[in-house]
Image (tube, rainbow, N blue to C red; front, side):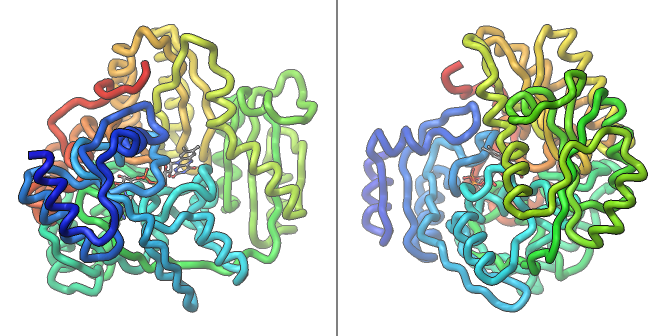
Length: 483
Ligand SMILES: Cc1cc2nc3c(=O)[nH]c(=O)nc-3n(C[C@H](O)[C@H](O)[C@H](O)COP(=O)(O)OP(=O)(O)OC[C@H]3O[C@@H](n4cnc5c(N)ncnc54)[C@H](O)[C@@H]3O)c2cc1C
């Protein structure tokens, strides 16, 4: 059977078909803690290859999982069937106010092109230039600037994709399908959607308010509804001036209180790092400093400087106006994951599981208390940093390699609390293998049923990245690699 799929793919695909062990091993991992060996990798050369791959997968009852740069932290692009590599879809067409782009384009290439034209695409994941546009669309990525400019879902005008039937669809242009999506959207129970400014869990049907929003259902869908062929993204003019304040605090409680006040002045970013990151920064902090806030404004600089100075309770240790200094200090924040991994001892591991929940700012203090209780109960430690202005914290739980069973208990307890606090179990990295089993709990039975109808509408045979977002299986500790 395996040989037959291979032969069929080889004769139909104009791009490449890789089945060798080394390639299958390469595509079996990403930046997460998981591993799944796929059957075969198709490197699509064109649209026809994408359609043929889906049709062949359907015929042979196997899956198609589209992959970008493989930087997902939760195994979103790992699966056992066919992996669809989209690196050849890397065109960039710049126009006034938007860019039309292929999903295989690496973000760094887009950034460079936009920089030459003094423009930028707002969502800026800390992975920087390495992720692909397809992956950012698939995860509904965001970053420090999302506080002001929103996540990917808030910055897309149009999406063209191939669904699970092999049909090419452009949304919101396609009126018939747009109407159908709006019908789904009207049925949702909004109360069970998280009350947050960023969310990458489930299908973001809550963002579909008008027929012209229908494309948003694809964003954050992790390749489970369609393979994106191209996207029209909104772009902005580079800000004329920026100012970055780095502020030290002696208590996390005060930092959170102060973050809520600072947020009211509408900065473009409020980011948080704990001791693990600040210990890596070459600067003489006060011995009692527990954490830092990075606060940036990209407009009304002098007015905002006055405002922030009148409300901060910490101490400003850096006030930066020069672009090179701003870039240097943001690098420290963007390296937090690297510093976290570097800091753990032999025999310990950081599974990326409870790592990017968000809650409304009013409940942030309670989220930190929940984390402290969990750490006490399970004798674990955690490193925390993240997008505090969005109530979105990255938690790196340090666990004993030999005690992986606790991960599921910890995740269940943490996510239960996050949901009670009106939050989302994932604000930016997606459900993947680590969170899909909690999506039903996150949204409730009624909304989950609507999610299943949406999945069926676009992918009736469940061949697109099965097991992600909609699943009956628990995959949280299955497939953990090298634990
Ligand atoms: C060090 C580090 C820091 C990070 N910091 C941030 C951060 O600050 N903010 C943030 O939001 N994220 C962050 N991430 C996660 C990051 O957003 C995602 O890893 C990234 O956007 C995924 O891009 P990728 O190209 O690697 O996608 P992949 O990992 O390859 O895929 C991600 C998902 O997108 C789907 N997908 C890929 N291409 C397509 C397509 N053409 N059509 C449909 N679906 C598609 C895949 O099936 C998969 O479900 C970080 C990750 C790392 C490793």
